[in-house]
Amino acid sequence: MMNIKKDITIGANTKNPWTVKRFGYGTMRLTGDMIWGEPKNRPEALEILKTAVDKGIQFIDTADYYGQDVTNRLIAEALHPYGDDLLICTKVGATRGNDKSWKVYDTPENLRTSIENNLRTLKIDQVSLVHLRMMPGSATAFEDSLEAMFKMQQEGKILHVGLSNVTPEELNKGIEMGNIASVENAFGYGQRTSFEMHGMKVRGMQEVMDICLEQEIVMVPFWSLQNASAADNSKIEEVAKKYNASVQQINLAWTLHLNDLMLPIPGTSQLIHFEENLKAFDISLTEEDMELLG
Image (cartoon, rainbow, N blue to C red; front, side):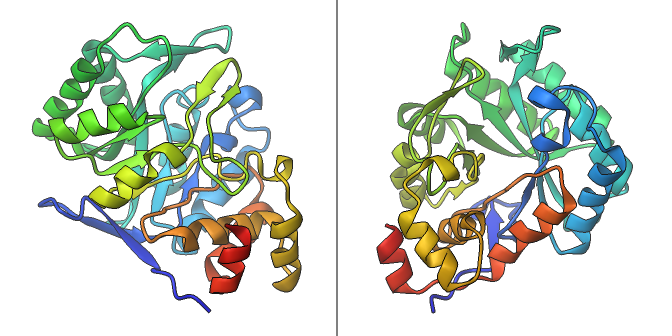
């Protein structure tokens, strides 16, 4: 069996490193349909958040444009005041139109508004980690947006700055400009390349992984289970049968075994699925399993 690291450090080379369990929870699915509005089952949504912390989850991913503000308010209701070991990670750079569309929101003024909103709705004085979400069609220069993020970091509103939905070129530019603590791109066993969803281009992780590994930047794969069932699952089904596990669980275990910088954040709106996902953290794959899966 392969031994995997059970924890991971955000900002390891900074004055404020933050070590968390190497398995987080993404809150996007706690909203209503199309990531809009209140959850269908609000009590269960709150229970998932409480259970996540009770089960040792120390990394929760959110955004003020989930819902809108739905996940932030749920987090605050369920978990505030927060434990000292809980890292809440949010994203900025996007917003939602009243027609449920996704819109670019990444001018320096937009970003400051978003950060202030996150601070207010999460009931915190500083955001521990913020990913600047790169949205197609932006009219703002990447450097201007990221400079605004670093400025708010200097002001103490942000502890660590990361990037999301980023290209290799943007990541390299970001590294030149300052300390990039993490990258949040779409990635999973069945999803390693870019794809379209809700009319929005989602960039995969594969293209930036080598840079992250070289620079020791934490990788936060989102939608890691999104297209697992759409891939050729013959190999992963074989491994799942071996461990009496689901394809989804082996997908997560594969991600954890791929390299020590992966911090998966699978999301779900059902408590039973959350607990099933969490079991993947304890699956130990062999080198033969990883060679089979690729």
